[in-house]
Length: 193
Length: 119
Image 1 (cartoon, rainbow over the protein chains, first blue to last red):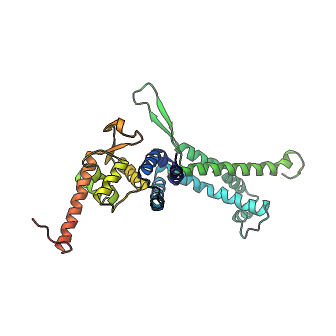
Image 2 (cartoon, rainbow over the protein chains, first blue to last red):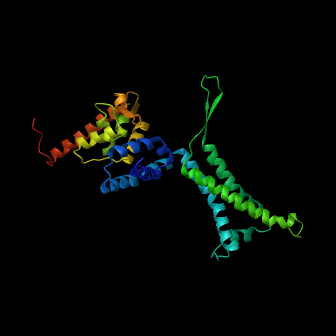
Image 3 (cartoon, one colour):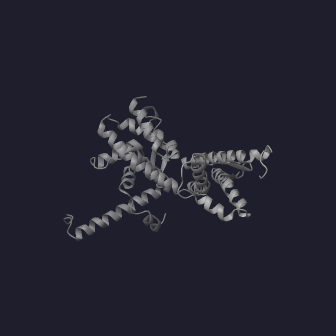
């Protein structure tokens, strides 16, 4: 494969993965047939990619699966902010001008709302992953065939992968927090737990 | 598809109308569509791969074109190419868009932007 073809394959990464898997080979063939190797050709290809790739990403965001992934991303805002602010302030010692979570916690400290607050922070990444996971599965009837139902796992969008990645990272950090905060209690080294 | 449904799809973008025009007389693959559009517009409209296949995707989803199983001569052709053809619905929409453009040209003549057509 020529260098220009390899470069065009890199350019194709700008498109949504589903569009790329459907039309990537055809676009590469189109590029090869039309490539004169000149600088102006590449300028034309890059400007076409900038407009058409952004159009395809916008079109993908309008699809129901992407809307669910967007909702899941919205659910992650609260725990993501919580982890980010607290890691910056307490683990890295970077002064944070305003910690909204501390402000809320001060108001509800000692009440049963604290448990709800902790539960929301911990369960949000799990909820986000379940939402994204459920949106990628399609179950259809067997329609007269010998099978009762057909289960399809759909190709995930880039946003879905990002949501799952951030959720796993958040659960990891929150899990470490829980372990290290409760370890002295579990080892009997702390009186008040 | 009813006339009302056809009108809802209008106006078509220049790229989409050109693709439908390119497929009006014969099935073509993506590169063939681009060459035909370039030839007909004398190079004024040159569609890049992203614009072309993005438009083809939307036309397939709308049911205006379909994947043509036929290949002119597989021995002479590259199997990586996919041929497309106009559907009945796509032809109706192309006719509706052509009529809309014809009405606009007529209005331009009425307003003396264009010379009157010689009968």
